[in-house]
Image 1 (cartoon, rainbow, N blue to C red):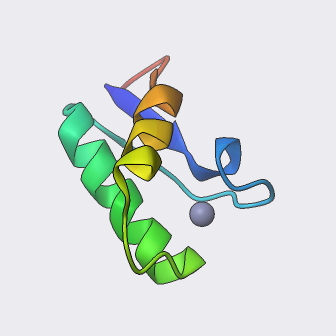
Image 2 (tube, rainbow, N blue to C red; image 1 turned 60 degrees about the vertical axis):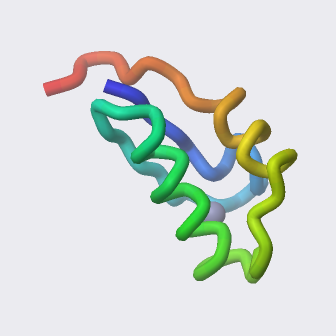
Length: 61
Ligand SMILES: [Zn+2]
């Protein structure tokens, strides 16, 4: 289970998501960036920033 906390990228944001597939976590995170943070264009550098902050979720149930 992969997990991404938006606050690791955007201080103060407590949105987070988790999914089995890293690609799906990135997709959801990119969608959140558009809707919540006004990122109309998701650049490769943004995707890399998200990817580097995805962690293995502990206590995945
Ligand atoms: Zn956010």
